[in-house]
Image (cartoon, rainbow, N blue to C red; front, top):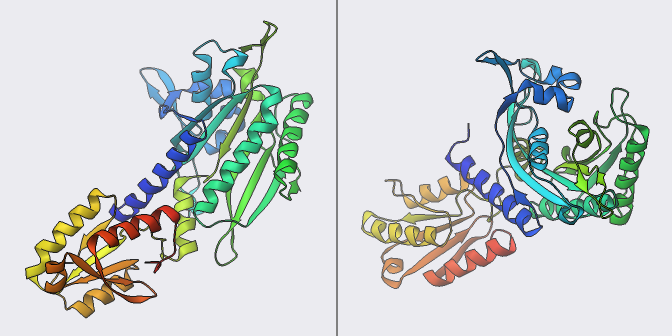
Length: 378
């Protein structure tokens, strides 16, 4: 369940994710939640991933499967139209909710659930574009994670597992493409022998939080299997039909898990740009409540998440409540502020910042959000 404040943060995260992907040349796509089980049989998931899938459902005598993955749907989208080498690479991204069977004893809050939203993307490219595309994905991963303050990573290259499919030739091409991209990026990495996906090798990235704890997040996987199974094609420069390479990748891993990591990392002290409530107005009496409500409405029109504490509590109690709830900014509002169109600002961990004109407060909050400035930067 995503309650209002969690819902606000999720919306901020997802909006940021969508915007940066569009800027990086991705198209946003959406796919169904269920499909004929034959799709999962053709993809290989039914054979190799059955233990992690829910049971099928009967729909008018046909077996349907709730999706554990988004990738077969993206494959069908690719297959929907003829493709030329001139069209590639295609970069498709989806915040797609998937459903995986987990035993009750393995469930753990936001970190391991049965239904979650992957920040999924698939790149369809030419074989000689693999290294560049993976390199670009690694750069995008760094840009996204650093926005949330994660800059210390552990990188693992996972190779072919015992239970796998595909020719050695394709596994070698995929593995070499991942290695080349990592070397170009300059990231040090360790080898996880036999820990790749059943359809291809992968790069796994663990982030370190403020307490030095490591969390598995991002993954990049190179795949020749699905293009072969679904007979994906593009018309090459010489007019022949060739197979594209498919790259799977997720940066958060899942929105739910990443949100849990953020809560742990920040200990609830969300930075100003991400805080569900950025500014709380504390009227000292009922006479100034209308001014506070007017200010809050104006702030919201500017995209600032502002609320009014119009409770009957004393001002000191309101300040205390705001501190306990870890609101980054508060403003005590009395007759002087209402008459002067100003706010008496307070920043968490800093204290009183003095009275400021309303326009100045608005501009400084927007600037702090834009530059991801620490609390108290006003």
